Length: 334
Ligand SMILES: [Zn+2]
Image 1 (spheres, rainbow, N blue to C red):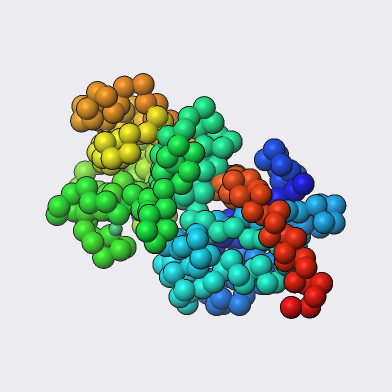
Image 2: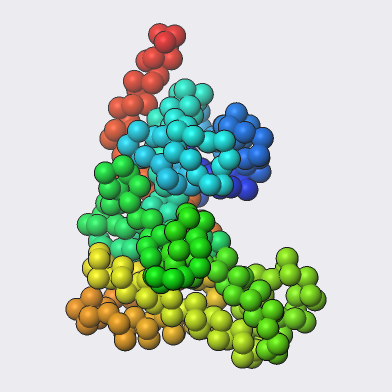
């Protein structure tokens, strides 16, 4: 038995072929071409699926798991209107792909599925209650409660990037102010770095960016910090404090056994994790923080893809039944 997993991103669509234990057997990717509209994106999704399916014995693929940017409803398979997929409004993605390929499709929010991937195959393997946070250009998350994703009434729960951290904070993409994402994401780091460059304070960022403001990003701030740049170190420290505040809220709300952090910012390492953990220790009640590891993901960029495989495995029996049903429908020409 094989499973196909697809990660639909704003710039790239990736697909993998896995066996029933989650071992990856093949992978491919191509540009999403979101600017060319819905039909092009669907064609690109079908194309990467067919490419990895060609590496499997015919008939061996049970189902396809797809992770897409939220908000979306995993129960109906409908993607609402993600900011990075222009022109997408209430797209029945699950049904569209199912109709093209004749195999059962399971759809999930990419950050929720990353949580499921971490829970099933990664740092969360030993735990039943886990929160996963991705910190990259934005902040997303997923909450696992006794082995299951918390979905909420419309399937959109877990948007932790938009909890308010600061009453008078910076404006967020969502239109609100002071969101976690507006303060602690890679984009927030870049914005603070640009503010810093507008002052007279000495910083290696001037040299590193060669006065090209477009090139300033979180990776460059990390580089400056590791070279001992005081201003960059302070900037990362401030980010870690905001992360610590957000994670304290999460600990109190969901009482997880482990918090796993992924995304580019998590790769900064101790410069972020040490002050973050110290802030959590200062703020969280002992019963919520003691013996709760806060760790970087060990699945790297593949965490979301592992989540799509885990989603199909969670629906294994349903997938077997629906695969047969879809085969009958195809045979009868319906
Ligand atoms: Zn927001």
